[in-house]
Amino acid sequence: MSSDSRFKEMLSRGKLIVAPGAYDALTAKLIEGAGFEALYMTGYGTAASRFGFPDIGLLTMTEMLMNARAIADAVQIPLIADADTGYGNPINMIRTVREYERAGAAAIHVEDQVWPKRCGHMSGKQVIPKNEMVAKIRAAVDSRKSDGFIIIARCDALAVEGWDAAIERGHSYEEAGADVIFIEAPESVEQMSRIPKLFKKPCLINMAPRTPSLPAKTLEEFGFAIAIYPGICLATTIQTNMDCLRKFKEEGTPPDFGGFLAAFIQFNQFLGVPEYNALEEKYKS
Image (cartoon, rainbow, N blue to C red):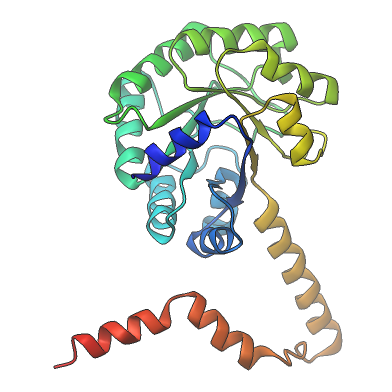
């Protein structure tokens, strides 16, 4: 079964899909190795890790696609990928969908922000007219090759136009054919609890800074179908690196990696060195 078909089947189960955020192929493999059934390619993490940029619309579709393809190639579990605004009008959206589908993503989310966009949890966002986003969603749905490729409509209007307008937009995106509705950055538990009950289609929640942190069990009880955790790997890596480098700078000697040799061997096994060694033996001249 293809990854997009598996993801569509997972959505039909009615259980919460927990998707930690990967910013590269290695973190994707770690997420898969930890036993998660799906993962999320974070746009914020892609911009920060690959280019040292903030998430303010500085990356092109090509750069985002390169990361999505590398991640999809590295794992077997379904990939939900950030596709920003679709990189233009409905015609651009057609190409975006086809490219992400070819890259191996099982789902993408596209948002109704003005380009250049901003991280959904930053201030200063602006949104395009509702009818423009509706047209882009219709184009996205019409252009996918497989019905299993999931189109997630992200609405950033809550911080810009308020609750009622955001929910109205969500209904319009649902009617336009989006498979999943994503109301970005609710700021209270009360708002979070209401969102899944207001839509017929499954809903996604983004567990990022502006949104209250709740257990996955609670999110499932609220009725969410998907929970993404964009920063879980990135934040851990940043904090560990900062602590290690600060200590190195202060003390003049690097930390003692006492168990490094054993960890190095184990990690090489995780990356598949034995399988590559077997292939070398098989094709040895």
